[in-house]
Length: 241
Image 1 (cartoon, helix red, strand yellow):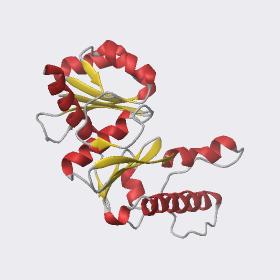
Image 2 (cartoon, rainbow, N blue to C red; image 1 turned 180 degrees about the horizontal axis):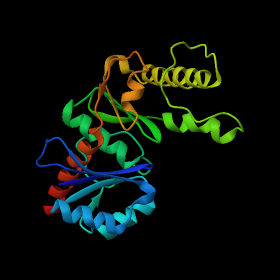
Image 3 (tube, rainbow, N blue to C red; image 1 turned 90 degrees about the horizontal axis):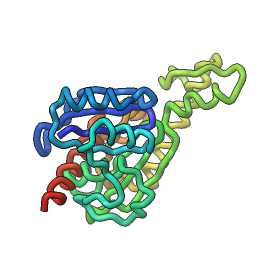
């Protein structure tokens, strides 16, 4: 199965050889640069018979359909491998995929934090239900926000300084960004009950954020793609009945 994770910044294409297999990245395309021709080329190269996708950008959904007509988009009416206690009309497909992989891997008591353009924190409770979560700004959004809104402050890399008392503007910004973001993440983890759950970090900035917090976490950049494969397979079986 070809699985596609279309986010605000990057669209990832991966192949999953069989149920439960690790996704293998085939291509990553910056979201604004994705074209129908590029999607067609990837689908032709992979020779896929089925495809499933999550997409949080409506314009990109149109491109995916045009380039790969057989693609199944995960949405509010998709079959799931877990129960929900949320308003599915408003929950992003990527969050459903993250919970699908949590249900497959651990069954219950899982908190998945996905660090991309936005940061989502979602909880599978002790009965295996998706009960909701929180959405916060992503690390890179915060790293560029002050620079865009001020005349002199530079864009900085999200790497912790040697000391939290910055001796120059760049180090002061890094201290504020990294220290502040660590506080945001740790507070949300505490409020969402991370202490009694398995905690998974995924998304493009998962590794960087994991270095900022004291919480012991599993870092898996392929987590969402795995969840897309779970839901894609489930919905293919439902459609064939």
